[in-house]
Length: 102
Image (cartoon, rainbow, N blue to C red; front, top):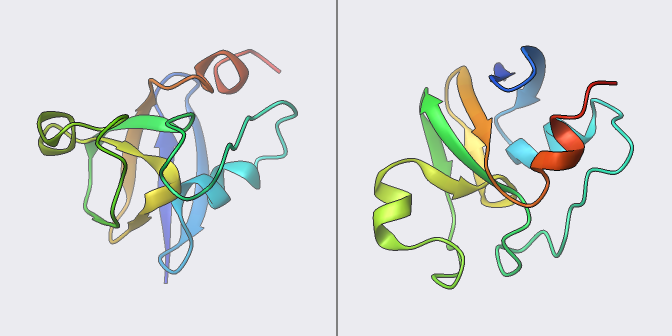
């Protein structure tokens, strides 16, 4: 099943399969320069804040996502999969690339 993911910073909406990570879906936007880092939760490049919706998460490096961050929805997009439509803000190092007007 696919869910809509809205990037609040730009107003863009993309569809993301619940078997894919939110980062993989974001890459499908075709935006040049989205730094994707390690894809395993260890580099912290793809940090986002989920402001609405449900997701399933996998283990993330506490160096980049504290327990408090995770409890507040600040997670790594490479380690979460949507369980419903999501709304997010880009807060990691990829903010400059994602939030740049195309």
